[in-house]
Length: 260
Image (tube, rainbow, N blue to C red; front, side, top):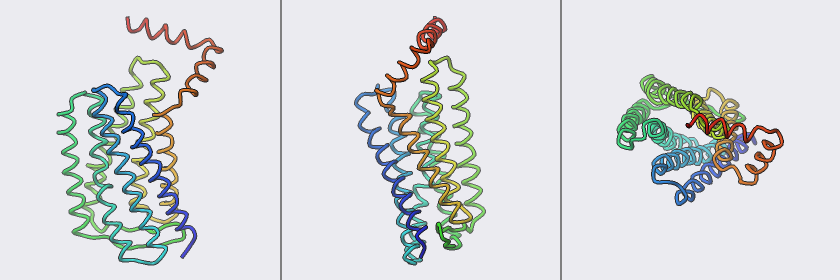
């Protein structure tokens, strides 16, 4: 088959390395975090791990498409639907906990989305899929169930995306130092970008659309990692630039005055 499928698989495995590396870095940073931050940290670890597992299976599925092992490819598609369906659960937990700060409420709300994910899988496995449709850049499937599509779009996509936008607006309205505001904003933008293109990846109408979505997902993971783990040397360079511009001290004083 085509070399485009091999390149598609390489991108998938690159996403796997990036997401697993991100999850491992978050896990290693737990010792330096306050207890109140651990629930969000654990939720992010689960989220990035699920994304990594999905693309690990997607990479092997693409290799199966390259080798024309259709039955194995279809099996891997069904298997990859499991992390795809439940990736919303830790994301919702993360958002609710950041807004409310109550782990019990966060757990309760995320359980609702766990149920939605289960309904999606039951409908998907029950009605099956149509395909695969293999092109130069990728291999795609068509979900043969309106119930599965509607459950995912209404319960597992639109609501969490609205939550992300709501949290983003809430952060932008907060009186926090601008650099911290930027870091949180770009972190949420990276998560939203990955979440949106994850849907496009799973329902891509063609191989080149699937390939493009995976490239954007890889960019989103890298963006999220560097926003979350900005090197100290880079922060020092920013401090030097702000000092030379004469804006660092002014911004700090404004923030202190607002706190009083």
